[in-house]
Length: 258
Image 1 (cartoon, rainbow, N blue to C red):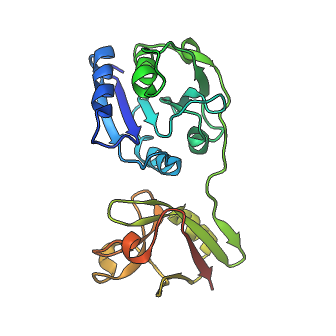
Image 2: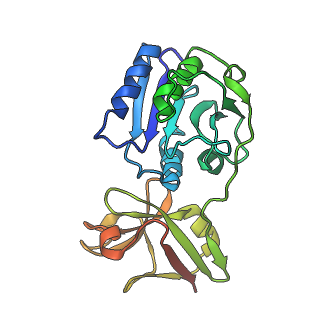
């Protein structure tokens, strides 16, 4: 790639110096780099949110893109720093269950990072280590030049509970508008539905159809719709399902088929 792309997905927020420090190092190491901010507003230590954001925000980049993932990145013997190659893109992160949940066993290669840090401190790996690894990759290093082969920790993500005609689906993401994303795509829902009618009770509101637009309901009404990620989404037109319905992360929604 003539002008390497490096993306940043972090839980740093935007009030401190962290973003500027890392970007400065990247521009110093890779003068022609293009840095893309995916988000810096993942709640601290919220790995589940990181999985959702990376899955929907990072995977459409060109081959050779380098992704720095710095969420809940406290290295231990059980959770080492790694580089993962997946679909000809590279992910620099910690093996804390996030890469395993994202890639399963489908990744091309993963290696333990064996590269000297910039400093003797161990509190800001993105600046002290990840930027250096990104520079090596951008300049053509192979993963074998960066570390030794590693098998990712594959954790089971939050699952949908299917019991007869009843399914229980957890909320896996709430966006800035208060829309609640369920851990089920519309395609998966239709496969389970098999053309049957259904009902979903959210507080006192019963929903029995999937809307394809917010305009399908009046202002203030609750609807089940399809998000930009193709997942089912509980929303309120011109309102927040999170605030008005308590649709927070990990809450389970029950859908009954008739």
